Amino acid sequence: MNKTVDITIKEKYIKEYSEGYPLISLETIENIDSLDEEGFILDLYDNKKKFIAKAYYGRQNKGYGWTLTRKKEEKIDKEFFRVKIEQALKNRDSYIKDNETTAFRVFNGEGDGIGGLTIDYFGNTASSVVEGFYMITWYSLGIYRFKDKIVEALKSCVEYTGIYEKKRFDTKGQYLDDKGDFICGEEANKPIIVKENSIKFAVYLDDGPMVGVFLDQKNVRKTLRDKYSKGKTVLNTFSYTGAFSVAAALGGALKTTSVDLANRSRAKTKEQFEINGIDSAKQDIIVEDVFNYFKFAVKKAYKFDLVVLDPPSFARSKKHTFSVAKDYTKLLKEAITITNKNGIVVASTNAANVNMRKFREFIDKAFKQLNLRYEIKEVYTLPNDFKVNDKFKQGDYLKVVFIKRIG
Ligand code: SAH
Image (cartoon, rainbow, N blue to C red; front, side, top):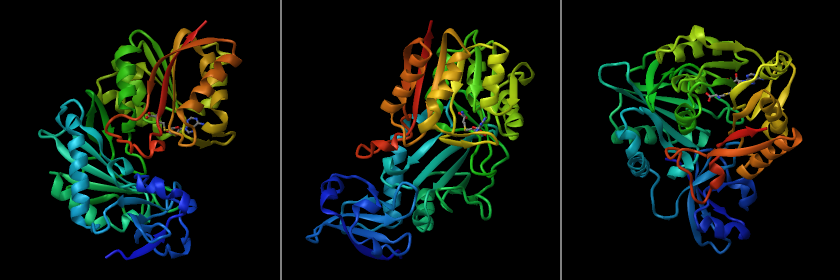
């Protein structure tokens, strides 16, 4: 049993929690010393001892835990988690029924009522009957302490071939790989092949912190393929496994160029092309620091019809440190400079500390400083399977803007 402690909420935050605000943080609680062990249940009260909500204690860089229910008597047991997962599955009905998409998020943290926990589904289409794998990600030791109940709850809701986990809670939400990521069922092939709007992706469920594809970009990849690629030259920077390049090539791009610093990106990108029937020898895959590549491209007077810019929130290479909050405008200017007139820049970030308004300011500033005009063509935030909590809009971290360079 997870022990329960009483927590007093500071006066000025009572209204927010009563209305369903989900995140517990240092500023909002009076008796911080009562937080003892992660995984404890927290009964939240106002200073007159009126019950507000039940939460759990779990340390993430975001905060100290998440509310679970506003019913005082509700037990946080397997049944509690089962009901939440069942509801989440109902909300993904359109994805479950879509045969051309076999990878999507089933449970998205506080958006589905339990912060610090996500569950992704990966259907392996390379076997005769689609094999179903689930990936649970624990974002704190606190939520991990409910593991047995949550895994049992998931098992009772779905048919599965295998269940995997990622632990992101050693320090600052980093990935912790103590003894592999497999939990139960059958182990998955390395790789399995999933589909997303008919695009195939090779996915490795037990090979480090990331599986090979970021599912939150599905709508962006589809639009890139369907509306912006035909006959175009495409540069994909911070390309990882080349998912945007594959989408562009399938959309009829003349040629794609993928640039990423990580050595492994070359083989991974080749693999993604090949499983989609694209000859990777006809595509450029470059292992290099993007900051150097931009300089090189300017020197060579390279220009592209479309440039994808999707850097990590923070990056450190031998020569540079980069943060989206401080340096995006500068990076965007470099991308715009090597984009053809009337070409498109796909500017993307998942930095939680930069909201859409600020991101649009970065874009405006970059074009103004270059004395160029632009037109916004498309704006994307998280797709529907990455459900956002109405009372916690910060949870919608994704910002993607398709911008046409005019002049
Ligand atoms: N756009 C990708 C995801 C990018 S993840 C997609 O949609 O799949 C961030 C990537 O940036 C990682 O693969 C990392 O290796 C790469 N990276 C980080 N710093 C870099 C740098 N200075 N130059 C090139 N790549 C970098």
